[in-house]
Amino acid sequence: MFDKQIYVNRRLNLRKRIKSGLVVILGNTESPMNYRSNGYKFRQDSNFLYFFGLDLPNLVGIIDIEDGKDSLYGDDFDIDDIIWMGPQPSLSELGERVGVLSTAAQRDLQPTINRAIQQGRRVHILPPYRPDNVLLLERLLGVNQHMIRSYVSTDLIKAVVALRSIKEDCEILELERAAEVGYRMHVSAMQHARVGMLEQELAGMLEGISVSYGYMPSFPIILSQNGETLHNHDHSQLLTEGRLLLVDAGAENAMHYASDNTRTIPVGGKFTQRQKEIYNIVLAANNKAREMAKPGIPYLDVHRAAGRVLAEGLKALGLMKGDVDEAVANGAQALFQPHGLGHMMGLDVHDMEDLGENFVGYDDEVTRVNQFGTGSLRLGRRLQKGFVLTDEPGIYFIPALIEKWKSERINEAFICYDKLKDYYNFGGIRLEDDLLITDSGCRLIGKRIPITVEEVEATMAQGK
Image (cartoon, rainbow, N blue to C red; front, side, top):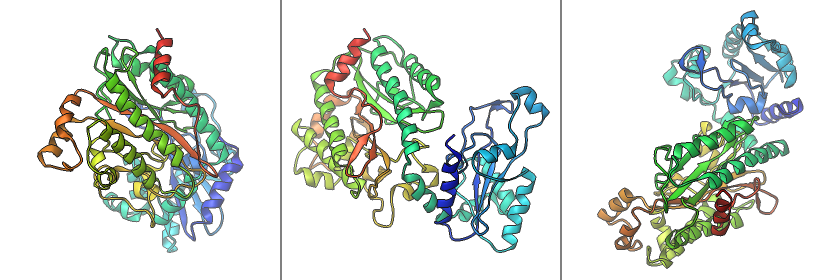
C-alpha cells in the first residue's frame, strides 16, 4: 500500500473532473473455485485499489462530490473470521490507512444510495465485469441487471482513464519491480528450455517464479512452439530441436502492478538462417517503435511505421511484393501480424480494459481504424509523458489465414502466396518490451531481456 496521502490526492483529483453526484467504486468479492470455501486467489478491483488501496474483499468506496466526504462500506471481522484468519484490523482502522474517516457497515450502503437517488443526484458507476457486482448494482440502483450498462457513467470512465493513464513516480517504481520479476522469468525460460521437456514444465517454472517474487503471473502464460496462435495457452507438446518457442509472460507484483514481455527462442539453442531472417525483421520493427515513441505522437502512427518495417523486410525475403507504402495502406502486412502494436499497462496488464478499450486507447481525435490488423490496435491515441505501454510487433505464418486470403485473392498484389507454403510449419515470432513515455522520448521499464540473436543464444548457452 502506498502512503495514504497518495489515495487522498487521487480522490481529490477525481473530484476536479466530476461535477456532481455520488461516485461508487466497488471492490471485488471472493470467487469460489468449485465450492464456497475453496476460492480462487482473491484479486481486488484495480479501480478500487487505485482510489482506496485496500486489498481485501467485500468493500465499497463512496466519493461524495458535493460534500467532499469519502466513505468506506464493509463489515468488521467477527470471532469466526479471527479463529481462521487471526486478529484483523477494524473497518475504521482500514479507512484510516487510506485517509477515509467515514466508515459504515454494508447494510448502510443501500440507504445511502437510495437517499442520493431520491434527491435526484447522479450516481456514477463504472462498468461491472463480475456477476456478483452486477447483482449488487441491480439491488442498489433498483434496475434490472440487463439494464446496468445503460447506467454506467461515461464521465466517470473518462475521468478515471485520464488519471490512471499518467503513472505517478510510486507506480513507476512498482512497475520496475514487476519488470525485475519478468526478467527472471524470461531468462529462466531461456536457460532451462531443453529438447524433450514438456512445455508445461517450463510454463510451471515461470509461474512459480512470479508467485515466489510477487503475486502471480499478470496473465495466463503463453508458451508454445505453435507461436502462430496468438494467445496459445496449450502447453502439451514436447520441446523439439529446431522449433521456435514463443514465450509471452509477465509478473504481477504484490502491489498488483504488471509486466508483460515476449521473447521467441530456438529450441536447442541456435536459430536457423531462416529463423534469423524473420527474427531480425521483427526486432527491427520493435526498435523502430521504441525510437518513435514520444509525447505527442499517435501510437497509431507508430503501429503503421512498425508495419512498414515488417513489410520492407518481408519484401526483401521475397514474401511480399509491390510498393511498400501502398501495401501497408492496404493492410497487406496484417496477414503476418493480425494484431496491434501494443496496449497500455499498469495495475492491469491491459490497463483499464474493463472500462472499455476505445475509452482507454482512443479519443475524439484518434479513432479506431476499421481495417484487419490495425482494427485490433488497443492503443492509438497521442502518447503523453507518464504513459506505460507495450511494444510488441510480430510475424506469424498462420496457414488457415494464408489459405483464406489466397482463395479470396486478398492483397494478391502485395503477397507472394506461392512462396509461403515453405513457411507453413514456421510458427511465429513476437518480441515485446514495456515502455515509459518520458519528456522527450521513452525508456524501457526494467532491464532489457536478452533480445538480439546473439544475446538469446548466449543466454541459452549459459543454461547448458
